[in-house]
Length: 251
Image 1 (cartoon, rainbow, N blue to C red):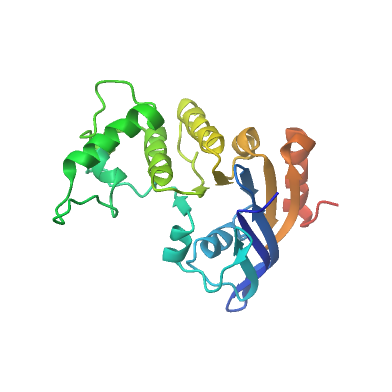
Image 2: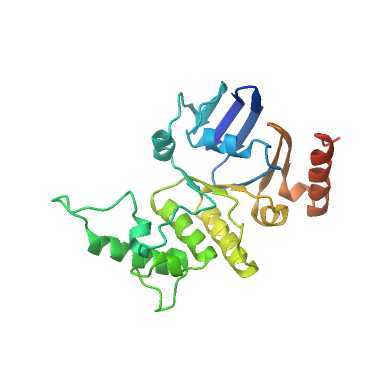
């Protein structure tokens, strides 16, 4: 199947520290790719290259089979890459509708903020995509009153609303209660059902295994293993992760 994103032989160094070593990584449409690895494995550097924040020292990047030279943050966003970070990049003191359209405000023909339209679209998103059915939550609700899972949901739905093709979730379950984690995983399934792709980065192998179609293990800047979830049990995956952490090899 044609890849939505493909990285070929990507390497990146910072001074004497080599963060990535000839990494090959791809994502196909409608796929959830779990990205696992300890601190220092290179996950953050890989994501910053995909989002255009860092330039690779060597290697090539392709979107929809087309090579992209000098990928930048605006170019990556234009290609449909959106990232939901641990901090969730939401303004806690602002309303829901302002958070949905922050930095991408709708305007009238005269250039004024079209508040009515933004509130109306937010209300539609609340009912159709976010699952907010309580009358206590409105477009004017303050984001700071939302739970962690609800905030993650807002950030994901915002990315989908702005035509994201690949949503990168950076440690999305960190600090979430079990019920909120389940809600987050449901959002991931919704993204997949919509035909979009997800790169799911998490230290918690159990959360990744539950929703991933394919799992990639990074270790010390290289791809140490890659598995289709249907072909590997959770127990065997945990054992392989332990082996990589201890020896740097799956063998």
